[in-house]
Amino acid sequence: MSATSAPTPTPADAPPWRLSDRLGLGFAWLMGLLFCVVCAAIVVFLVVQGVRFLKPDMLWTNPKVGFNQNTTGGFLAEIVGTVTVTAIALVIAVPVGVGVAVWLTEYGRPTGLARVVESTVEMFAGAPSIVLALFGVILFQAPFLAFLSATTQGHAYGKSFFAAGTILSLLALPIIVANVREGLRAIPDHVREASYALGKTKITTIRRVLLPSARPSVITGTMVGAGHVIGDTAIIIFLLGGTYTLQGVGHIPLLSTLRGTDSTLTSFIYANAPTGELNQPQKAYAAAVVLLAMVFLINVVVDISGRKARELKWT
Image 1: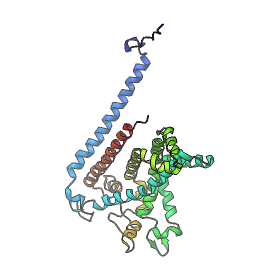
Image 2: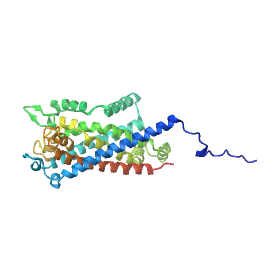
Image 3: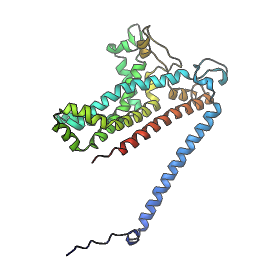
């Protein structure tokens, strides 16, 4: 006696949508389209205005004093400052974020401490950058950190690449932790058990199996965190000094840069906007399109790494 299976329902057999469901779907579509239109309008406006005023020599000349916008140089120092402070922030945030994510996901002991760390990471994710900037000013003006910035008669200036990069790393840290934890949780338990069956220790399994498998998530978290670092302005204004060219401190090359001051593209745009102290909108639009291009490249890397993560299927 053979069992007969129930007929598979077809879309035609589905009950009709209620009016509230149709209205909800239409509202969702409307909001999605509105978001796309607003985003496209912003991008098109910045690109048109930026390309209109961007000149190649702006990319390799520093700002200088002039009587009009055509004689005040470019923003090479700001590009270098953006790249430098982002690199410092990621050098700090990536290893710390990966380590915290591994500990919370694979160990989580003692439980009380794990909860405190998890809450702290979430707090950093929601903290306004202006609050972190004020904290950084107080921290790096302390006497025991005076060697990290310029000093005047024993008083620490508290503004340097190291100070700004350290506080900016707190913006990237929660994003890296969240992405790496998500990548580790996506790995099935039988992968860990297979490694243990081969005689591998837990730390070896993490280092040789889990972290390589979660590499796309690490890359995604790093790039998204870099986008947040590049786009911040408050911490830069408070902790990087606001000088429009690189001002090193001391004579040791690398240490001189870390202790020095500069500005980034975001602070340059802020100062040159029509409401800024310099009021050079042409320079602001030109710098904005360069910043937009940097963020676009980051998004491309995130998209590629995300596709690789989706292609990795566990059975």
